[in-house]
Image (cartoon, rainbow, N blue to C red; front, side, top):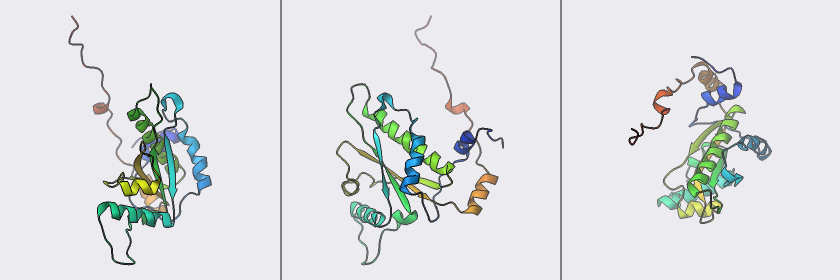
Length: 196
């Protein structure tokens, strides 16, 4: 399988979503440093219509409780929803559109998603495993309230971040996924039906 000579393109081509990550996570200072990689995201009028929330420790238990409440799930005393504990760090991705006559909300949501994906790439390049998770309850009233969302904001899910087992990293490096055939995804406008 051909590889890219450019390390950035190679990191992009080899990025994987890891459903299971190990212990550990970048610190808030390390995240702030990686956020510099998000700066070039396509952002019409430079509105920065997104924000991130780091959930660690007990915040993950609070998220589990909110998810359970939203789903109508009751647990035995001492039991907890383990889903938010799949990683030591969850980064909530919040689309936070700004009122602007030239930039529709859908475009600002696309910018927020782009920022999250750039952060995923930066985390991967820095050696961290990442999985972007959502779910049916992501914008339920209980989950929105936990995250302190304003009415105009949209929770786009969480980046689950953790370490990557050295053996798994070696297997990924040795057996990269098949590259996408670009043909079905790149085309041109249809012929002009009104042309003579």
